[in-house]
Length: 332
Picture 1 (cartoon, rainbow, N blue to C red):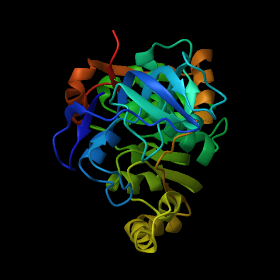
Picture 2 (picture 1 turned 180 degrees about the horizontal axis):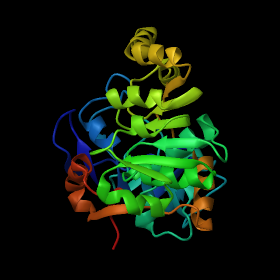
Picture 3 (picture 1 turned 180 degrees about the vertical axis):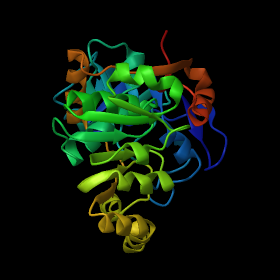
């Protein structure tokens, strides 16, 4: 089958023939209609996670999918041939830039009925990340104050909507051209990062979700109230991440060292710091699908490219400069 793969880290992403997926006892074989494109794909291609996610090469990239169930393993109970589904396959089982993919049943959910395949494929990774940050880890309540950096991006545009649905007061950072649009999306306060300093504007926040890192993360700690929480999606990775991946003692020690400085700064300010590396979860995706169908969430798509232009789609994600997500379409 056709797929877009890398033969080596930092090598060319190219179309190639890939082996047909092996469908296990509890797997669902999905005929791919559309696949979302993520920064994680480009980071993997560069080898940034080669020490922590031991993929075998050649590797088919792609972390988001929407499509139709073509076959199910004998132990599958929740899906049937013909079901329209969406998913973020588990780490070490990715590969949605292909005509077909086998995914564990537990990582799959029925596609929102109100969305097209292209729209549905834009959601899994970013929506699960937002859910795991706002609901699972931070347990955001009505009236709390939440700062989400990078509001116009794929993650930010979904996280703003989810935080608003949870009843939070939502601030975000973005370029000035996106201010009014982000307010329509649900943001209560938008700071133009090009001309304003969010640290001088915001105080006493319960939660910051950082998508930038470095000095931006350090400043984010200072806008939190005592007892507040900062969650970073870009690192540095912390000991919790090492435990999540089951890393060996040496890598666990390295993770501790990488985040030691920011964790010390957080302790001095009486706030909490943690790194979030999202995981696949079909049950959470089902909750997200229900929110989409209720009208509480809607996808934001910046570009749709044909499957043959997957390398261009990855380049577009790297370049940025648009609102929302990039999706490649295999059908239509």
